[in-house]
Length: 391
Image: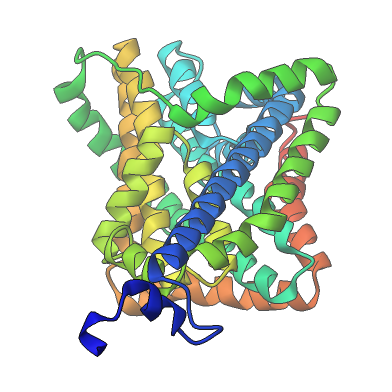
């Protein structure tokens, strides 16, 4: 009787080659996704470790030189160039701005001399994500997107300085506003934020650096090797892991609106205390086509705002009025840049258009990317400082 057919006979009547139960497939898919997620986390760790090793090596090369450059800087044009070069050498605008805050607190430089250095530091900090984009240089289309994504940060900072530097020279509005607000914050005390990335990576990086010696060259090579290794596999794994559904989730959360992206960039950067980490980790996502330049741009602006937190905390901890004014001028500079370049669509397209054009050009003539990094961050600043008699 059909009504009394046993489960066993039903199973036996299933056609050969029929699909397995959905539960088995679901378990396999979940396990595969778990493995890919763990792979991404491991590759991100190698990525951050490579960045930290590069930062340690540049500090071995140039921190003392950077400190000597900063001390006694009074000419605003020289200060701007010093800020670019010092930050390019130490791979951290937070380091440059914190050193500048300390020098102002000690009376070594004035507030007016410090503001151009802060502006230059904003340009110099974008060298890290531009270097990261070179990890995609062997894959033309990826490299086009990666280099464009990296240089959005460059062009935003360059355009901000081009507008606000002459305005500050003419009016002193940053110094005036910072001095006016400083009285409200003086004596409020500082706070040291916990940096989870540094806590996870720095002990390993320091062990590797100490093992390789104090010259810095081997540490630099180890950092570059880890960075390129991580990037080599990261884009491919991200493409398979971030399905259309996951991309939609990303769009609905971090990148759901320009304000959300600015807020996310600011919060992440304040937490890890490095705009370079925030912008650099986005480069593989842009290279993979997961994040567009239009989505990246507000997040980059947020990263610029978030990086001011470190210097502000350093200034508050000194309790020095001039040092707090320097940190406030950094905040005001980045807020002003965002207010000038982002709200108006026609103006907003300028850095995006320039970055796309440079990305396309660099993908066709890849040696131009190396030339760009060498000239903008090192060659031109060194030449101008030599002409100014700083060497």
